[in-house]
Image 1 (cartoon, rainbow, N blue to C red):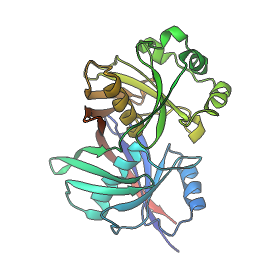
Image 2 (tube, rainbow, N blue to C red; image 1 turned 135 degrees about the vertical axis):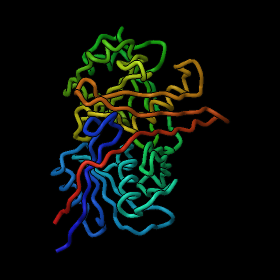
Image 3 (tube, rainbow, N blue to C red; image 1 turned 45 degrees about the vertical axis):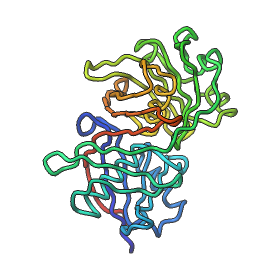
Length: 296
């Protein structure tokens, strides 16, 4: 009977058990798509990633990522969590860079070490794609907030670095904390959008060490609210901030916090730079090993 090693890692937490937990399944090339989807539902995390083989192909490791409801072409914390597992369990020694082959293409991950162990992992995200602007007045009822609480200085806009989000700027932490998605309105709204997940952020933070706060909602993917910072979402936010100079310039270097409403404080580092008409985005954070075992 085939056995599949699996690992539970905690990504973007300020400490173990505070970030976004992820299941990573190894040696998964013989599993069907339906089996991967079922395992993801059984694991119960916002995403589960599957390393198809321990061998490199075209300079990277083939990986598929699933949410409880469907496969996705890219997601941030599975990319970094999977890179952590590959470095630790497959390579077994320090490497400064490795590549992961996802459905959207090859993603490069850089690893910084502290005392011989991985410290911060960084990934370079695909070039951002900016979609249409949205009417704040139509979106406010979806979020159960007043239109005046959406910051009118900047657009409500779709952004994707491989996984699309509707980016919504609000004026204060109070407005951010007050967001409560009306699911019937949400599903009616996303019928006409490419982006099915909504990222709401404000230019304030609870911790004096951080710069921004955000929340991410994606019931379409089986995640009513993502409990901790998501790399794909934060990458889109970095691109948005750079494009609109929301922090005063087109160079972004911020600490983004998430998960406080769910008592899961997490932290993601975001860098973006608008040069030569293109925006480059990098996101980084810590990864902790939580548990490991075997699926039979």
